[in-house]
Length: 457
Image 1 (cartoon, rainbow, N blue to C red):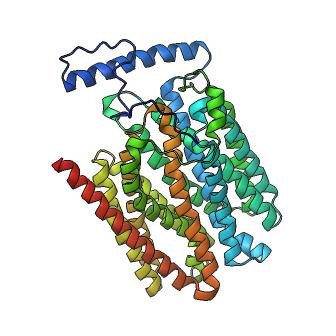
Image 2: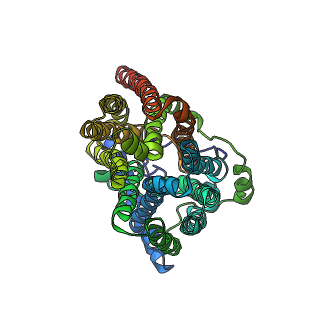
Image 3: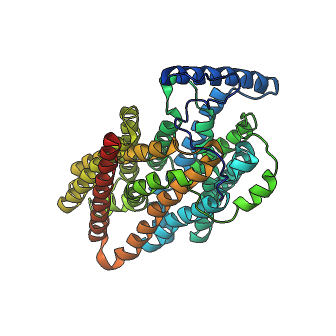
């Protein structure tokens, strides 16, 4: 990915650029007048754009925003769908815990490769073509799951899924900010959806797969038939998406340059990005533990034989995260990131105590608390960065956020899978959880320090 450069960071991604068409600022405009004028200008511009899009058979910007939100939800639901099925695959094909986490991690590795190469491609060629290609690839991955008859095909399916999700992530995240409504009543809606949709999607996918395991005789096939149809329909609908990336001279050359593996964090964002890294690692490392070994923990440590419970554990974590994100959406982002990190540390500590006591109710309670911290901390980190990048830098920057997130999501989980045979499942989860607590506390300290510095500046 490459930093397009030459674009000043936006102070509020929901408000229009003061240089937008129809806006002629006077030398004595005060802050309120400027904000009102810019929102009005953007609203007028969007109205004209929507009329032109409708004439070309495209949906409105508002409809496009919610189409992207639904697409992100679908990608994340598909990502967590295999989690409750891993125990079935493990019993069917007789592979070890290390192999199980490898199946989980190959998705994250492929996703990272896609983020590092095509994560910022939509900044150059447009959001729509990248998303159509990613959705068709995701449909192919669902077919691969549907026909898998061993570990090899399962690894292939997860790899293709990771590549498709990685290609789509930067484009969707940037598109949600591009197309978010201009109304001041819904400011930061793009950042909110970027935070809530992943956790909500992960919850829906895990719960849905768990229900398929409980109530159908062919859970490893029927769920992927449904998802294949969903992604084919979304690919067709994406052809109607308004294109927020304007053509510019030399974009073909820039697109080729952007395929070089790079992490593109715009210079004005780097300080805030570095402060958010411990939070991103702590939240997604905890998510990796639950999505890779959650089912094994409930069956092997808590002695709960019902396979639906493995899906419910992931659902409890991610659904609580989605709800918490909605509750704290209007609070200052740095404060939300710091406070969410503290809650995450408390929740992770509670789940460790529950594993030591082999208490299922305590484990679910700790998971809900940790999920609240997960969702709010990630929202705070995402919002603190979303307002700082310009339109031509957003996909690249958001891809960088997810590079850190998915490294934290995959690498510790693989290490845990390797450690299970020698340390045991309970001891491995305890060491893992302690590391998450330490990182979350560090993120809280850094977040509160930056909040205090901002108030005294």
